[in-house]
Each structure stands twice: as C-alpha cells, then as structure tokens.
Image (cartoon, rainbow, N blue to C red; front, side):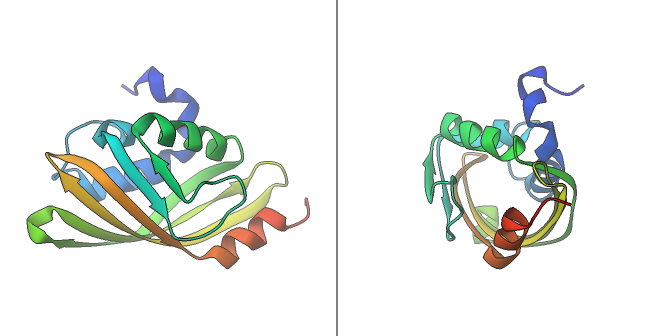
Length: 144
C-alpha cells in the first residue's frame, strides 16, 4: 500500500519507481524518499529556473520535488541502464522520463544520467545530468 505521506508526489512516481528498481537491492526503504540519507546532497549539472543546483538534505529535496510535481506529471520512465561500480557503492543510471507540462499540456520527454553514491544502504550523494535543451523546449513551449 502506498505511503500516504508521499501522496502529493504521485506525479513523479514513474521516476521514483525506476530509481528504486535500479537501486533496490543496494538500498533500504520502500519509497524514493526513504532510500535517501537525511543529509543527502542532490546536485544537478544544469540550470533550470526555479530548481537549485545543489539541494541539501532529504527535506530540502522533498520541498524541491513538490515544485516539480506541481508543474510536471510523468506518465512513464524507461530505457534504464545501470552501471554498478565500487561494489555497489557508486551506481550510474541512465534513463528517460515522459510526461506533460501541466500549465501548457506540452509533452515532456527527457534523458538523464545520474551518478549515485550509496553508504550504509542509503543514497548520500546524487549528481544529475540531463538534456537541458529538451527541458527548455518543453518548459517554454506555448500552450496547446
């Protein structure tokens, strides 16, 4: 049964489920937010208005994702490729997400590569790369 604490984040479930599937055997927790260390550092290597380059702590990341799900609803996440290194302490995941920009109903399709560091069965550091042009095009497109 889904945790009601995370019900507001349901529009990002395809992403959360993909990550959990990629890392599930290496981390403890049932939901994306449960597999994060309290002091996780989530770093993005791109600029998107309203999204910080570095987010510190699980609560900070939850706040940032609240803004995400208020603006984008994902329908799916796929094309997962996982590269495990350092006995599973570092995992590189490549994947795609597909959704809709809520304000405009414009389709959102993007590709990501994330480098995930795991300690004591929790994610302690996340470095994210994405197709910035795809995000820009979707976020600045006119309403349909």
